Image (cartoon, rainbow, N blue to C red; front, side):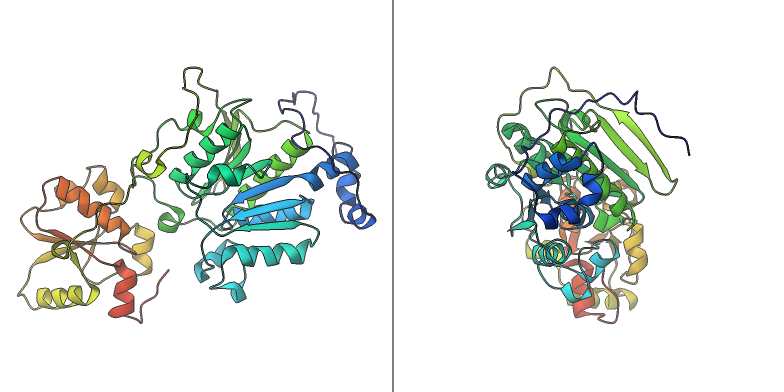
Length: 399
């Protein structure tokens, strides 16, 4: 088998991020022996990993493989921040959790899985939602951040907090069959804001919970994130700083794009309101005249079937969600088409309209946009289809 030439792989990584620990125990030598015999890693690199402190944002799709591979590689201190509990629908891709963990906090489930894999790792749990009030303090205790967040507001927050503190971070993103990975480090190259100077319009990009994700994609992207983390910690190889790796799981191909630092961009000096920046500030609470309960909607539908009431029931979820479970008599118009203005012509202003989604958040946003656009006869289902299944049709599935 021909060897692969590395002559053209010019090293672009900065110096090793972490100083080496004093030494390795006999147990560590045995455990990490396959690293130790790689010349580029060796005992020195393994000692750097032992001394490293890595914070992982989220113990979900990307965090699951990332946490396991960080622990297996011998990263000495791993922090996990997450405020969510394990749900049955997580197990399709979040491999750090199991059936027995359903209902448990994800950080506790992840800690136990790490301990079972490598008890030499110090796991630090942060049971919180990352926001502008805690990001700087949390990040200051770590050498490197792995961002596995699933929303734009958190990604911009991670970027800005890391830039202010001068820390590098590895970013990963997944959606359906597509994944992206890069390294951002304001001191040495571009940041996430150079790749995405502006956030996409709110509602225009479905989350994984709305649009779905190919489970195995998480492993490919999460393991590459750890590869980049280990390279930064040990100072080996060529990092993805200044490049974005793009993976098409459906086509089975990788490609990359280059991203450069914008010399005209103002320095990042403070954190801001990231939900407002991304246009996802929660809408004002709707009053009783603009919301209906699941039981009220059931009565309205019965009246419509009897010919005594006329209204449109509009489902603003994505088509995959609609295929899993729906309210009979609803029509599907995804929120992105409405918020972009594309679907206004499909929504009559001379009839009552009830919007609904999974939990009520998206339908509330659509309701606010419709009222702003001049619609008067609009309301939404409080609690979404989750409330409908709970209170009206419990035999239907949830997701």
